Picture 1 (tube, rainbow, N blue to C red):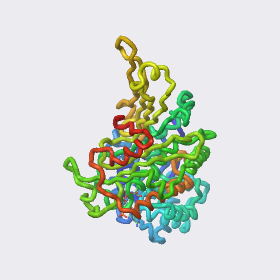
Picture 2: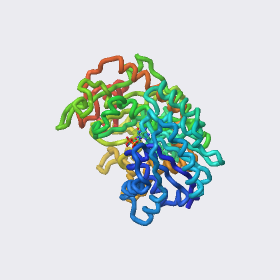
Picture 3: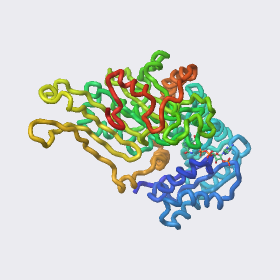
Picture 4: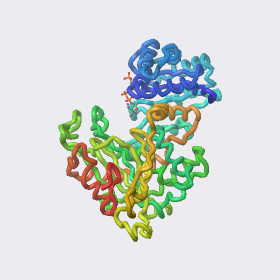
Length: 491
Ligand SMILES: NC(=O)c1ccc[n+]([C@@H]2O[C@H](COP(=O)([O-])OP(=O)(O)OC[C@H]3O[C@@H](n4cnc5c(N)ncnc54)[C@H](OP(=O)(O)O)[C@@H]3O)[C@@H](O)[C@H]2O)c1
């Protein structure tokens, strides 16, 4: 078993939805596995007052489905403390420093501090500044790490402003920007599938790959998130961060090594080498959509808290190309949206047709299909490879089969949840699965002209039915290049 890490967690927004639903269960899993042990403490911070006992009860409730041993769960919860704290009140930070020192001493934490800001984004900068100005950072040789939730800005300018605020108090190598997709098992598997398999590594370029398709589709609509979602939209909420990160892992050249600085360097080079669009490019290569009513479900504009004239995008499809020699002429198609036909996060790598193929030429020009490698990320991890084989009949005919690997229940249940993986990395100071500032900056620079063009023009919404795979224009985007979406089923 790995050595347990020592740290004091200060959780700003410690009674919030994310903390209770995801963060405490993730920490408990680490506790069960011994990655943290008796040498940790968590200080929950929020305005409304609670006693330590009330807070510990909240924590126990939040981990109840993971707890198979009540004594262990209570022992874990006993490391949790609560202070009423308004992040905008400078005075409140003064008490924090003293309390942090006491907990440090009590649990022998070596001065290690992790400041996790799980609150509305407008507070990210102020927390960082006050922590530094009011001397809450550890100064006795331990580490200070700042963890920032999403969203990181709403365009390049606001992201840069936020980053400047953070970096007045913390250095880049102390900042961990959360993108929880980077904590997903099969997202982390992408580099292994690519670089760990010579037969895949050898063909991972424009000579063999016709196009790559990335789909992040949801069946659900906006649910109770309209307040936030209507000010963001699918482009900001899903493309700038998660989709771009997945695409970058697929497109990057082989890093010099798999340590975080080298992986980051490879990712930054990839993001900065996208072909950035002007207005004409946006018009040609990006499509937006908004769901209407259908199959008994309400239109986006009729959802609670959504204005009746909202032009917010609930769907985006786009074609991304790179200046990198590896991808000359090979487009990456991305697609994400709500109220679609399937809940799925997946990558479909469509290989080129070999026009000189002996079978295609002589016998079966139409039945021989292209190879497709699919990486299934959600809801169940897996890999599929479509290959051609001979069928069982007399004579010479081919058929197409899938070599399938889907995680079984046992494997799926042992896969750590994204926040557990990310906490583990934060404790170990490993940045591989976090977005660096140059990555975030490049992604916003890519997305900004798209958003700007959309803000300035009137869309014809609604333009897709719930339960479909988005507007017709999304299919046409690929058809123009002689391609089609492979998922849900190739047409
Ligand atoms: N929830 C999710 O599933 C989810 C998913 C992905 C990302 N995120 C991100 O995670 C962050 C937290 O989201 P959330 O859903 O957990 O938010 P939330 O449920 O609204 O919780 C906000 C927390 O902040 C505290 N708070 C608010 N104002 C404060 C102040 N001035 N000083 C100190 N504490 C204050 C609240 O407690 P008091 O009101 O008592 O102060 C509460 O504990 C956001 O950045 C969000 O974008 C959330």
